[in-house]
Every structure is written in structure tokens, then in C-alpha cells.
Image 1: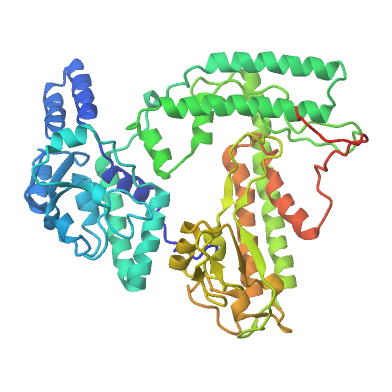
Image 2: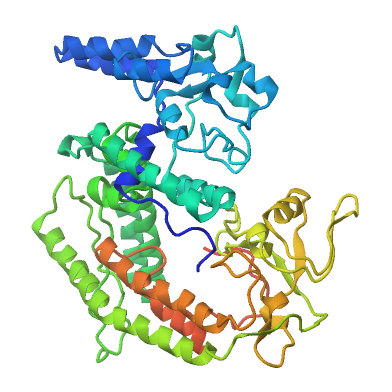
Length: 544
């Protein structure tokens, strides 16, 4: 178990189908499609899309009437409509909500139909919505619905991650049997609507990133300056490589960001990426942006001088434009590296798992409570921004995730009022953790395996919840082997990732750093990139 969430998250077609089903389109978007079809001489099709545009904000009597309108082609799946809240038969609606109109889409009515009556009605998947449908989704009777929709932003779509959170919430409510029925319905809907969506990939869907030429020209200018500084001896080869890699990775990212922003919301390729069904920004940057720097495959041990790990000439073209002969040749280096790494590293990752199991197999849950008085302080973990202190720190793991399923060592107090939110020696569940975070608590002392004083293995209270079952860990559980496998298994993924990027050099150095870096940590070796130590005493005021 990685994080205790259900492993049955939908993928690929299922994600795409449910994403398409839950999309919203405005009257304006329907009208644009109608105009485009009219210019192509498709009068009948244009009339159909114009009808959808006019029917935004239509009020229906009940769900059956909505389905009849959809089946007869009066409204589209993505049409934003209203119907009396009482008509969707949700027991979780308040009396006030039941006496109002529910604003939703045809697709969302179909999607919500697979959930039991006591499950919230979802227009968006947010932690709040998974508890109860918010008042913002309702309007009083007599409201001008068309006007209301004209001023409303389109709701965010249901992405792969959202479906994962939704399934986790369903599992909390209905356990295994109920969840399996709902998953079955989600699967059927995913396949049905990904078929009806008729997603295709055409060459015309991929247009080269706008503004690319200007960004590449600027990058070339800066690269020339770095080369000149290196040739004059003002930059060491290592410094030159770091600056050169950083420069072209920034250019590539800018090109990629421009590309993603310029893609139409309803572009099939964009929908596949945004939904999480297939592909990501990096893939599209290579398709329609630029391929960027390639990893250099040969690191000859016989040569004494430093060899850069990248090929000096970036590939400026993308697959859509096609590569020149020299670019194609450079790119074969990277592809070859990707394939050989995959073959060599898979065995290495299995060996790492074996060594970890060897070390940890004796660690089991030996007793109920070791009675330790030592606690372990936890707080939010942020990514270090030493080189770019002005950037907003990126949260790696929040306090909520770090305290859920753990026992508290000391009582947790509200920093403003001093009230006790959670007593000491209490198992923190999701609700308590939510209260702690909401109160603005920044650090908490918890029981932890590092501070456990059991003579044999670890005690139940220092370990906390078993993520596989969601309950407190049982005595005799082989937690050491579970931990070793939880680290070893993604090791294979770290290897495979090389294969997907096709040997393209990445910002954080060559991706093969993944597995060797994990080994470096476990073997406590001196890291490759050691810090530079200054011979002069003083404080660093600026880093260039």
C-alpha cells in the first residue's frame, strides 16, 4: 500500500469517457461551432448546434424529461440546464435546497444517476462537494436561468485524479460491495461515452506552438554567450553544462506552456492530456513544440577530462514540423540510451528490493504500546528553493497527510484559543486532521517508528494505521517487508520513465538519476553533486 487510497482508479478510455460526459459548454461555444459548420456549407449540422446554443438555461420538469430531450436531439450532453432539485431524489439536500432549481448539465444528470440517493450530487469534484452539495449550485425559483448561466464560469471537468478522489469517498461510504457496483457503472459509462465522443487524432489537431521562433532565437543568443564564456575559461565545463541545460529547459518549458494555452478546450488531444487519459505536457511539447536537449549516451571511463551528459546541439524542431537529418541523427542517441537503460536498470531495481527486504524482514508489530514518552515533530514539507528564493515554495507533503492514521504524543492545541483540538494518545482520523489543519496548527508531535522503544520490532501505537485495511495495524503484521516492497516497487517505474521520454535530457539532470539516487540514499554514499565550499569566509549575498 502506497497511501491507503483505492487502487482501482479508472484509466484511459474510462477517464476520457467520464471526462467528456461531465464537460460543460457555453451557448457561445455552441454558436461558434454552428458558424464554422455554416461556412463549410453544412446547413443541417449548423442548425443542430444553433439549437443547442439556444437551449442553454432551459428548465425541465424532471430527469425523464431531460433524457427525452437529449435522446430527441433538443439538448446536447454539455448543455447547461436547470431542473427542480427535488426531481433528482437526493436525500442529502436540505429543505431549502429542495425548494430551488439545481443548475447542472445533461451529462452530469446521467453521471450522478449511478450513485445512491444519500451520496452528494456532484457538479465538481472538490473535498467540500464530496461531503455535501454546496448552495452555490442552486438558485431560487423564478430566477432568469439564461442570464444566470451567461454570468457563470464553466465548472471544472472531472479529471483522472478527481475520479480517484471520488472512488475513495465512495469506498468510505459504501465499503467493498457498494463500491464494486458503482465502479462497474463508471466503467460502462466510460466506454459508452468515449465511444459516443468519437475522439480522433488528426494532424490538423496539432498546430506548432505560437511564438516558438522568437523564444528559440533568444535562447540561441544566450547559448552563444555561455559558449564564449566557456571558451575564454570564465566558466568550467560543469558550470557551462548547468547553465546551458537550464537555459534550453526553460525555453522548452515556455514553448510548451504557450502550446498548452493556445490549444482549444475541445481539441481531442488536449482533452486526452487534461483528463489524464493519455499523454502529458512533455509529450505535446515534443509533438508540437521542440524536442530540446538530448542525453549523451557515451560516458567513456578511459577519458580523464570532464564529459558533459548532454549533446551540445538541442533539437529545435518538433515531430509535427519534422526533423532535419542531423537532428534525426542526434535524436537516435537518446532513443538508444532509453532502450538500453530500460534493459539494464530493471534488474537493478529488483536487486534493491531484495536488499531492502533482507534488512527489514525482522521488523514486525510486537506489542500494543511501548509506553514511550518521546514524540516526533511533523510539519509541512516544502521543496527547497535555495537557488530561487523568490519563487513560491512548492508543498511536497502537507501536515494533513502526515498526521492521518497516527497517534498523537501530546494534546494538539488551537494556536488562537488554546483549546484542546485532539487529546494526547489519540488516533487521528481524517475528520480530526481536517480540524487541526483548519485551526492553523503548523506542527504536531506524533508517535513514530523512529521513537518507538519496543525491544522486539515496533508497537501498534507507534506504527498507527495499516494503509492496506484502513484500521489500526494488527499484532504480528510484517511491516518491514511491506515497507521494503513499497519502496522497491516504484523503482521499476523509475526505470520505465526513461523509456517514455525517449532519452530527452530533463531539468533535474538525466532521468536515470531516479534509481541510483534512491540507492545513494540507502547506501549512505557521498552524493555525486557535492556542494561547493568557498575558501573565503563571509556570507553569500547573491547567486548567479
